[in-house]
Image 1 (tube, helix red, strand yellow):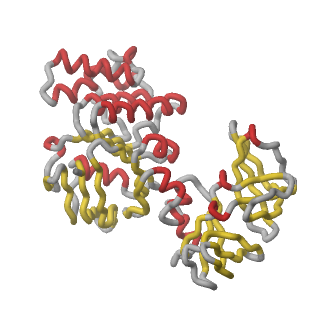
Image 2 (tube, rainbow, N blue to C red):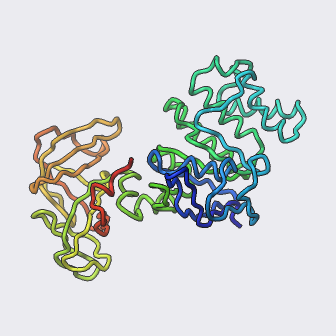
Image 3 (spheres, rainbow, N blue to C red):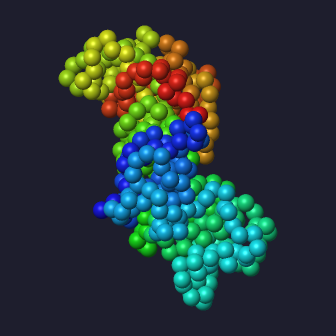
Length: 367
């Protein structure tokens, strides 16, 4: 049974359409991550879930009960905002204990819960400090601890790790998921970090302009995105405009400015215009002509980025198009700008999309 259900929910702010007919289920015990550019409606969605906003149209249900007008105090949910909202006159420990106290826990138990939660976010040593004495990242961890300690069954996290340094962020995101799972909670986690979403989410939802672009398990969304925008936002890709020249069974030959790319046909129509997408890590780069690959082209290295455990290359093909390739350092020799190389990829690596009505560049816009 879904713990939370949205049915054709719409929210406006004046003339701005923030959410447009959103329908979704958040199941009991699920960890849902929401990705999308600034202004896509992510925070508005969380506030509707929390009861901080009411929808203009549609229905919100919690455990099969309509809760459109039910306030935040009467929902079994806690909203952890991006901008902390701590009580400035209370210590860190008192801030975290506020939730258990508000839910009727004895003071001694509330302080015990608060202390254990502060230890989780590595702030036990600052328990008696005031919020103004903490850095922004520390304040965000206090807000996170307060949400975790509240006892609510639905945890709504708005960019909970954005102000925390990279090393601690990696550790905390998995600890949050562990707590949610071990405690039987349900979590909705808004983030701009695609890796964060993939590593902790049971399901991922992509928003753009107040509409759901994709919704599903991380592996499916990454490998078979619902559209061009999702493929671009979620992992990045190189895109090419092409025309279907020939189809044989499940294989199509796509003409791309003088080159022919072998791709899955997906019942494509001859002479139709399509968009091809290729993930960086699916594009191989080598000095010699590789064997056993469906697509092989020559090109010239135009730029190189060292990323620690990998290198990212931008290669200009003979037709003038550029393609990105990401190779792990230990598995390949380093190339330099100006080197001539072979670029190769399999037919199954190619993502094929219908040509968007508004054009490729407009479809790729994230703002």
